[in-house]
Image (cartoon, one colour):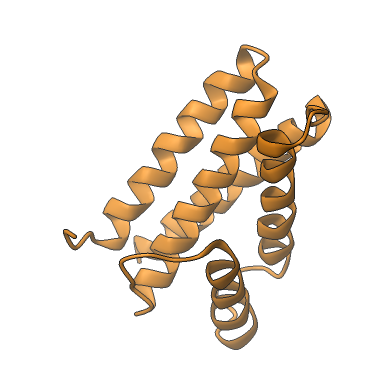
Length: 128
């Protein structure tokens, strides 16, 4: 596997965010939820890599736990609600991908707004 810099990893998050934006603008709420979570996942990977927690692969549960424990609780790099956003986004993504009932448009719109802020703040930290 090629080694990517944290900024290169973050660019994948930005790509998923663009897909989520397109999806929500066109009423594809399932796709938006899936892509929004992917954007949060990759942004979290970028933040972890920047802090020295770089791995070739991450399980979803491990990534969320490490991000919350190390970057929110131990180092205070990010606000506490970022951990909550990751958990909520994962649940909404699972609902969109595996449940028959589609996610509510309001929840999906909130999630994409959270993803935008999440990526923006992580980008600011990576740019220091």
